[in-house]
Image (cartoon, rainbow, N blue to C red; front, top):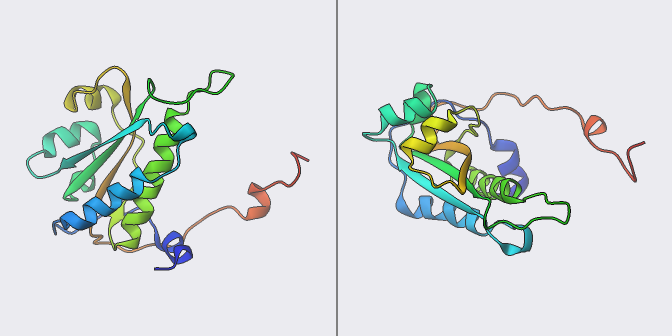
Length: 170
């Protein structure tokens, strides 16, 4: 699919078919995340692939919407602060790098006909316990992954004139 079409067709899926995801497609979306650019190529992230079957109770504690665990797979994008590059002023790029990788994963999924929904409103304490996270890892976002059972609604986005400045802030 043309990249512009992939961007246009991506939407937040909130209803999934029960169809399993082919192993090759799952590997392709994970490979897209692996190939994402990161500061100084540190790749300070890990992805946790969670099969939803028999994990509904755990997933409900993480994010209480049934459609979240309706998809056959849920993916957690974890930032590894101890592996990330730090800018001169101390800013740690783990979140930035993990976010870029997650975006690559989501766009690759769209290209393959799979649906996703970026989830940031989860319970971090439940996540840490359920996923047995080490102290140096933090989940930045989740996405269900599966075949969409709903369709896109028109996108509401601000015009470029409100989002872009040239040559400075003025």
